[in-house]
Image (cartoon, rainbow, N blue to C red; front, top):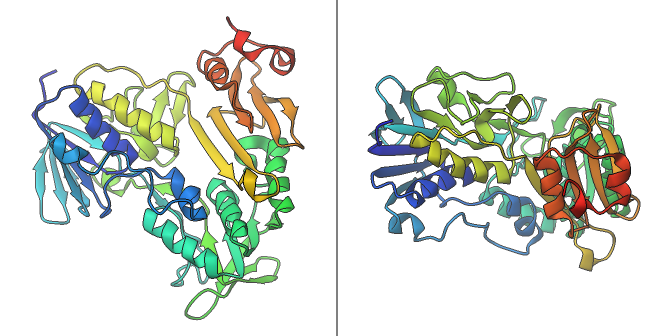
Length: 415
């Protein structure tokens, strides 16, 4: 593979910025262009629903220091969005009138909040949470709100509920699922998160749909399919994120069944010298034997860093397990709190749940043990001593029994 002269990265979030930095760290001396639609320099998303929303920080975690990009000769074009690709001509066009030829192209366009397709779903004043500006606006709204309704009981919805309750607002969470996070964690562990929020005063309307957002010029409440209406000063729509694939789709790249851009084990699309990473990458993962699309911080960082080697012909598969973390409520503010890490990819419907510790006390590690005798996923909740062992159990697919997981030394398994 000939050495490229110019690498263009579209998307200046964690995945894109990690790719650009890793290219330089590998000694590449050609041009590197990093296009980002936001006006801010690249930052990480987890603090937006945690520290920033809680008021513990006013800025996100920046991917790199402010001067890094100039010091490493990375052309960071903030506030500039790519509008069109011509893959045959190897050209990228942007909304500032720019035209950029590339030898290698990395797509890292990320995700955007999904909309609620109901009457009133487009009212001005509805909140979503995806950017630092969203987080600061929502924090200010929570501080003055008496009644908050959150539509959606996933990670963003539950973390936002914790932040709103911490600021003293009445909070109601509406979702069609019977339990929060049930599709990821299964009913038993999902019940732990429901109980946590219930203890903090969150009201649940689970198993119910939204018929409309009420209000004439701004939201005043949420009407459920049951006919009940919940008044609100603030309505947050947290029904998931959609990968930004319009650019890739218009260019003729494969869009997989999970909505992402189809890439192989090495994060390559079918188009020559075009790669996709982060939220949009529908990645054929050798460990799982199928495509996996992950919308979490660790995957964005890991794939962004990994793809740099493949831009220069290494063609190595990306093998890291999915990983995420959450913090809900604060242990020093009274009442129970959860801090946890999850690694792997479970099938809660078919995997066997094995619990080490006490679910009711919010002090446990949960394992999802497959019929193949290996741990498909592990989540430590308020337990922090076994992280390396859990990484190894999941990453190395070590055969274990349920009894070993509950009673033995995790550090000794597979040793």
